[in-house]
Length: 181
Image (cartoon, rainbow, N blue to C red):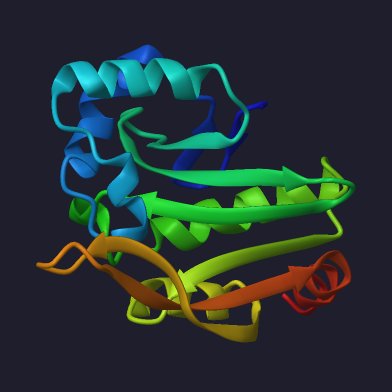
């Protein structure tokens, strides 16, 4: 992945020295969908930063002024021309529009450089911030999957299933939206 620069951010490949900042938000993930990515120790964060440095699926989101990692995006290709996208940000940087700025830059890159035809995201029903982000990115709600996936178990060890929404946007919709300003 090439680096993408916005007004306030740099989107780039992960580096091993991102481990401490990655640990800051993955040692206690806010969204249940990221519980499987939870990092228990700084050593786990070092291993994960190294793993992410070797793939194009995870994109580090850093403040341009300091270089500090504040979150990440992911884009999983589904041939021939679709990507599953998502985001996870450090709560300490919430409310400043960084997730929108980063996701919009990634969407533009995927549509123009990677020739994506369609991007989609899964969002758990109770994740209000991600629902708002999808809407501000121009994604449309395509459906609700009832009891779609489980990230945690109840006290008896039975899975608790989540209702999940799917949002999507097509390249032509992104282009029309961008043309309108």
